[in-house]
Length: 577
Image (cartoon, rainbow, N blue to C red):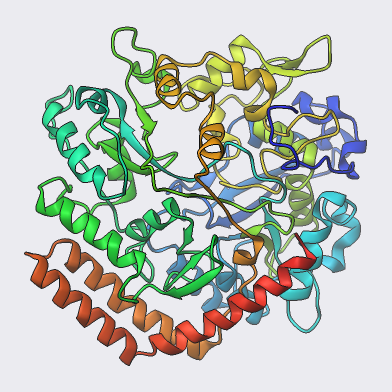
């Protein structure tokens, strides 16, 4: 794996599941559980997976769902989780004392609520039904940590982490993107700091005031669906500078370079800088006026339509960068959202997750068919099943070469690159996105090395790195003088490597949670007021109001609490990294 940075990927030992037949697991054929026992009846398990961004609900369908049915006679009925009411829905379930059969948590505090209410199944009591989890070396540290630090007095396993394993050398969640063709027309100006994007984007909008359909373009656009204790998509800019504003606490700025953490309400906080950045964008007429009220789905459509010039997530491009859109391979003028960084940035790189991230799967204690729920969870954590979910079926999407190297077939690339359009050539049909999308994250990181010495996901196979580079990528790589964005970042000392300590902060007490929630309500609301403030004077007045109100509600105590917990986590992490 010479394309992977040395030391980033560690070959893991084989798990119990890998000893089973690879061909049988990936075939998608009908030699399944029904043939083993004709008396088995179909089982429908309800699932509330908060990690998913989908508003869809109903029975899971498509090629991956078909494999689950063939293997286990199980169907999954997903309950909708998209939108900003997902946490309220969870609290309603907990208040009623009844959870759906399978629950996916996207934060430790959510999982803690369910554990404290006694609503989760102790998975240790069903070890024999969960060999993929308990007999696998892949998950040893994640299980040990979860039992020791994320359990109750029983020290049993109630929540099983996801995204376990090494992070890829080329996977960055937070990345400044600019619409390439407009950036070229603006003269591809150099960008030294975050604030320089304002003048650059202003030139881009002048070059492209409307899209092909005649709709107005904007330099920047935001949404509020995901706001919790701050304007989350404003705070997200901090990751361009190695500052976590989510995992430790959304009211804290944790610098993974200096290993210090401070309140977002400090006078020199990055959060204030980010607020001022968008305030300035609005003053220049560059901010989408719908930003405060629009949903994520509305924003995503605008990206798909090429109406926004700047993006802060590496994946937030709608379908504008999809090959099917016709932009990225346009021969005359390739277009799409491209990585264009400011020279002073240090892009946050996630830690290698030996204990997983703070996203979990659990089984409800009130599940009426615990055996089948265990079968499903065991299936989901089987590395060979995950290989299938990541890559689709062998011999129709991918194959092994004569030398034993996996590669995606020509037909397979067509399906993958048209992930929401092309039908999968396998039983169950559907589109490629039907595999992992309903879960958003599964047990093993995509860059985990399997027994064949290649990563579990096709994305990092040697042939994939060389596959059909788009005309857009060729132009951008030529400007960056690098083959990949990861190579560029490391060559220019622009990486802030995080630590698993960010995932080791314990759940706060109820008293502390109340402080955080009350402060968060003030911060969230006044943040939007500051972005749309009439002038600098009003902006500063609103900031002072936010600081004063935050302190009155206990921000100093919150800061002291998390500074102590962060220090403890830095000490604790040494055992697991």
